[in-house]
Length: 143
Image 1 (cartoon, rainbow, N blue to C red):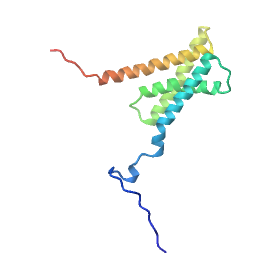
Image 2: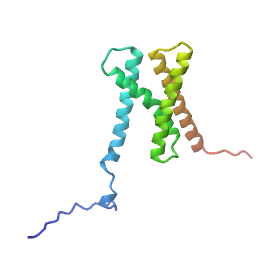
Image 3: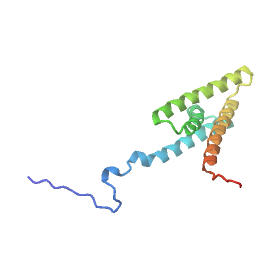
Image 4: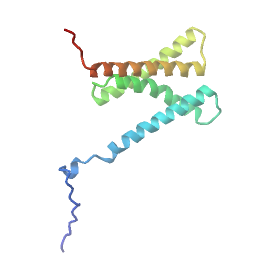
């Protein structure tokens, strides 16, 4: 019996077949975009007080993902598992601190909590962007 081997068409990329990016690398931007969309829908459902069965899970996803994503962006120098653990822990800490402060000040509301988490997550992310832009800016010397 003879074995027939099928060769893949050669390409001029200079890469071996095992060097090609996998499907999981191609799906990462799609997954990130989906997460942002789900979080945005959750925040919108909570802020507008729309009655929907998706309101609770999408809002919970937003409350965990917004500060977690911002903290993860700030911790870019860590290895992936350390970064994930630190961002999830930081997300829980931010949510607990916001809830505790709102309860202590007798200002608790769902809309207020979502708005506070939005502001805190946005501020963390804007600080990360400002730090990156400052590092990229050329230094000017005056003589």
